[in-house]
Amino acid sequence: MVIWDGSPIYRSKEVRAFLANGAAKQIHLERLPAYAPDLNPDEATWQYLKRVELRNVCCFDLNHLHQQLDLAILRLRHKPYLIRSFLTAPVCTYEKVYFIMRRSVSRIVSRRTGALLN
Image 1 (cartoon, rainbow, N blue to C red):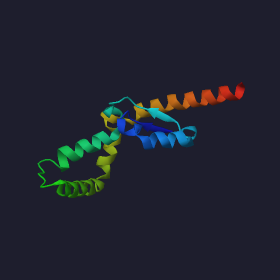
Image 2 (image 1 turned 60 degrees about the vertical axis):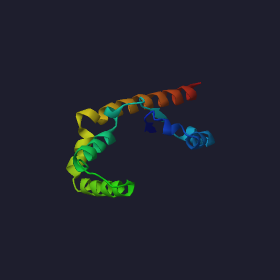
Image 3 (image 1 turned 90 degrees about the vertical axis):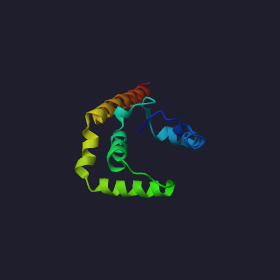
Image 4 (image 1 turned 30 degrees about the horizontal axis):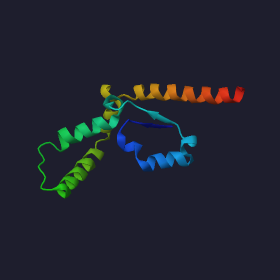
C-alpha cells in the first residue's frame, strides 16, 4: 500500500506509465486529500527546519542554501527525541493515517474475498 497526497507531481507521465505497466495490480494507492498537512509528519519536520534551524539564515545563492539545509538536517539527526516528537505531535498523528490505512485494507480484503466467493 502506498499512501500519497494529492500533489500534481504524482500524476506525471512517468508515474502513470509505471502504474500502467502492471504496478497498479501489485500495489494499492490510497490518496490523501490534496492539502492535508495534519496527516503528514514531514510537515512538522519542515516547519522545525524553517523556523528553528534556518531562522535568520540569509543565503548568497542556491548552493549556499543547499549547504545550510544539509547542515540543519545534520543537526536535526542528532536530536532523535525531536524527530520522535514530530511523529506524535497532535497536528500530525499517525492515528489518522492508521484509520485511513485500516479502511483501505478493509476495502481490499472485501474486494478480494468477494472475488473468491463469486
